[in-house]
Structure formats: C-alpha cells, structure tokens
Length: 108
Image 1: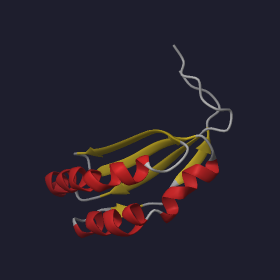
Image 2: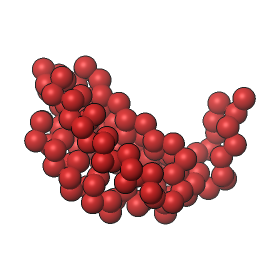
Image 3: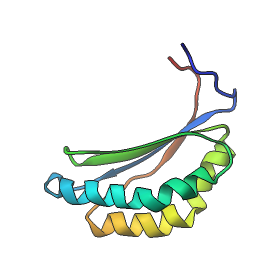
Image 4: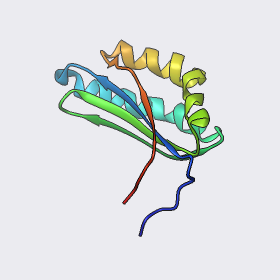
C-alpha cells in the first residue's frame, strides 16, 4: 500500500560524519538530543515523518518528510536543532554536511 502524500511533499536530508571510533559517544548524544528535538520538531506545522540514524561506519543522518518545501525549511531556524543539538553533536566529533531538500516525485 502506497502512502498518500500531498503533491507538494518534500524530503529533507541532513547528513553528518564522524570518526567511527566515536560511534558509542555519537549514538548516545543522538539519543540525548532526541529528548528535546522530538517535541520541538513535532510542534512545527507540515511534518509528516522524521527519522534519525547513526551508523557504526561513521555517518549519520536526519531524514524528514514535509508537506511543502517551506515547511521543511523551518528546521533551518529551529533553535533546538541549529544551535543546541548541532553544538552538542559537534562536541562529540560530528561534522555536518550541506542539507538537501527534494520534491517527492514517487513513493513505494
């Protein structure tokens, strides 16, 4: 069954990398930041899904689905994301890479 999404839906990818030897530290910090990021992100209009993952290979990402590119862009200004969580993740060695937002053209 394919999920019905608005025609204006967008997916946002926010990748980062770190030294794989710091996986345990980064994974623990990712869990810690979720305690305040989840309620902050849930308050934003237009959120459809949000996923966060940390891999032992030294990479991590946040993937979110929004009803529009404008709503996806809200994360660019969310203090909990851009100041607090970013600072805590950088303190454990995460380097963030440019985010990207794409219109969703098909789903399975």
